[in-house]
Image 1 (spheres, rainbow, N blue to C red):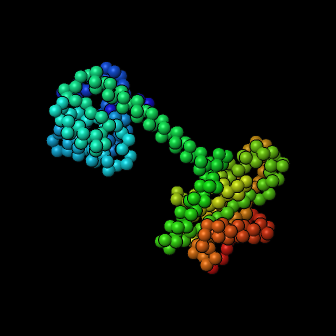
Image 2: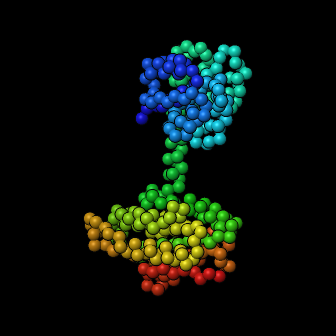
Image 3: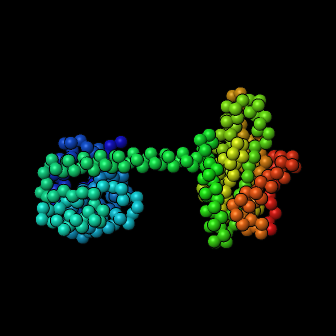
Length: 307
């Protein structure tokens, strides 16, 4: 995809000169024009803009007010804004830079200077975008289990601490469900570890389908998973766990594991509970419930009674 440019200037002739200069250089694939800061701000909110050229002197919402409006929106702060000023407006140039402008172009401007300054900002923005994308990928890699696509254990513990703190602060229920695939070692021994990975992936997809947008699921280790359910009482969490148990039983596999049927045991714990004060307490209670599910024949849901 190419770059997009927004020109904000109440002078049609200035806008046309900018368009002619930059179109000849073939730097942008799309151009937007606005005659005031307010009109430009509306375009900025509704279109993907890579660079803005904005005149300082305009009726109504001028360049400085436009910068102030941009500064109120976090998602707009990385867009380079070049101010158009006259040679004598040194104070205004400084003011604009202090308010967040990336650079300025003096009027009347030469096409060569305009082109050079725009190219510099495009290069900087490209590097910043690549760096941001790389950082985002690194962040995801540090949070996501590479096999299942669920959150990893470390991220789960961080989220759990935050959710416990929130639930205690506003006195709202919070539940944790621990899921363990029954006799998973037999799957690996019978079909091989590659097919075992297929089973884990399929289970993860089913888990995602059963959760609400604000719930989260993590691979706790091996064939164990943990679900974090904010604003969810113990009874509600047991219902979620039971639906998930049934869904896991109904997973249809293909290839060499077409005939495979799997099941899971699930343990549920929730706060408020007199024996649960920490994240370790909550996990321990859910693990105890999971142990009871296994001891009672597996493929079932058990919960820790509310204290």
